Length: 148
Image (cartoon, rainbow, N blue to C red; front, side):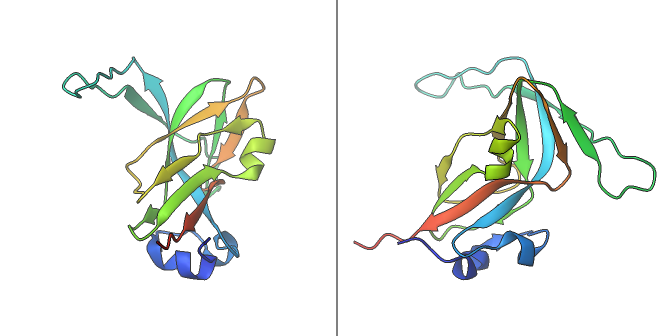
């Protein structure tokens, strides 16, 4: 059974504007930071040789007097973080926002038990590039309640 937005919001912290983000059965998640990937990571079976890729935070460009800035992204893969924290309680799905898809970018859909602002998502920007404003709604969160 899909969890309602009213119930789901009890498990989500750091919303930017609840009235805009909470829907009937989902919550919009917002962009916090964007990073360029530096170097390659390593992954092995046992985990002893695991190494995350490096990352370099990209500063948004702010016009004088503007409260929020923009990122002007070229076609490639970036890492992004989200503002919201999602507490354990359900099986969560984090998928790309439909507007992100229509703007020519995407990120993978994740299945997870929680989410915090330190986790990263790979953002794939299409061949035309992408402009993203700080706090843009880039992902959707929904949850399943499993009864056995």
